[in-house]
Length: 171
Image 1 (tube, rainbow, N blue to C red):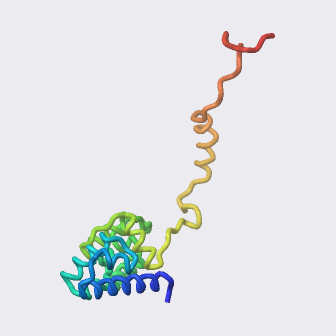
Image 2 (tube, rainbow, N blue to C red):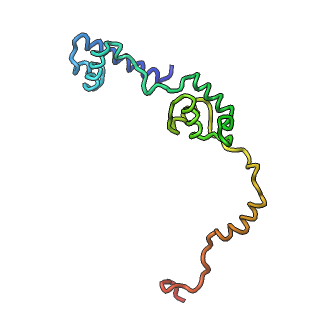
Image 3 (cartoon, one colour):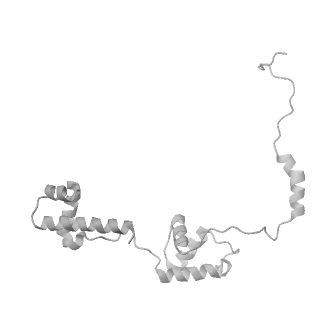
């Protein structure tokens, strides 16, 4: 068992111990002292105890439930493997926005780009860059552009002429 899991179990044991003490009629301040927590925490636990008994003090799942279940993730993976063009895009490039639109179209769920990234990472997908250059690349046109247009666009320092009146050089 991982240390995080051990810690959670220990915290649950402490809540249940406090709950049993509260059920016996021990004062909240005394319960807080015995289990080593603040009085405010015991007050919160007492409310949970009143609403749900000792089961109300057991560990609960934290956070929002996942929107995409395992079957949906499998379908998403198949759609991604089929390619972006098979899903109606002009190129084979998958972006977070495209994946988000695919999820929304297929499952009716809308996610932020960061959440889409987490979903893809959990599914074993990672960011990829093209291995080579574009087939459409025209080396001759690139060379001409660098030789002619880049020289015009590139900023070069002005030629040094006479020094200004504020110069500190004294010749």
